Length: 147
Length: 299
Image (cartoon, rainbow over all chains, first blue to last red; front, side, top):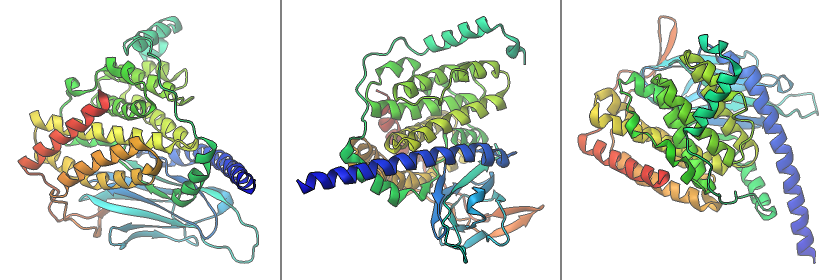
């Protein structure tokens, strides 16, 4: 019955993966809630939880819309274990609106939308040279708005 | 701050009154779908593929705030009846209507109708409980809301945090499909409210905000497409949204572009172009479609 064994092994592996992923996500939420949300002030958090565990070389992106007349704060908040990350805000044609690189990091970008524009926030974790340790850490991409 | 000095016994009675305002004991409900072992491998694979792409759908609170800024009026008659809460026995219905009541709650709260906010909080809590979302509405949430009834900003913060807790809890526990249904229900209710308000309180600003939902609709469909492979209810919701997308296809989008400039030390994006607009016929078609979809969710 090799098929049953294979299925069982895959199921156990997937179960373990889900358990670890769930725990990591819970820690990520706690980090985002306690460390990142307060830094959005005086902007109001838009209630959307965009956070992932990233390793060097990995990337995350968030598609969102800025509405005309509204003021926003876009913030990228990373766990210290990961170090600084690169991130940029691009329009629908991938034209860069704002960019922050790890060697000169900016953790948030405040703006006012004069017209309604769809944008994308792209975060990528730089590879660190001279180390064999791979650190995985939480990256939260948060948006606040002024009512 | 007067409310904060209430006798604890009075607060307990107040909470009980609010809870009873949202229907009585729930009827027996369907068993929630719990992942089987066979689902896990597929789910793990899907999580690995999609976990790093997010779609930021405007939250009910953000939508309600946009409507208020656009000059919309408050109309309690268009909201979902609190008595309906006990009709929702299937998990998918509960998830959709958690979104619907969440949108109603945000609409009432942003427009400062605190008593109705309490009723909709109670409905949301009931549905969250039935979906097994524990700790999102902890024991003190309603009491905290009661004590903040005269402090609108504090009330909005509590509601925001609760919505975030529910969404995060669902995602952390591998129930992204339930989260997606909740988000879809909230988005549809937001569109329903905006289009219904425009029927009696039309303005170019309100039409613009409705027209702009074309953008978030695309993101919402993309979000749902990442989960709908193995979920019949999500597939149905996706078809509903695609019906709306057909109507939005003809809507004129904003032409402001994304040029960056500085204005009194603030970075400004876009501007200079025409805003998104809706013709009378487009507005009526979207209003009718949103109402038809929403009625299938709440009934």
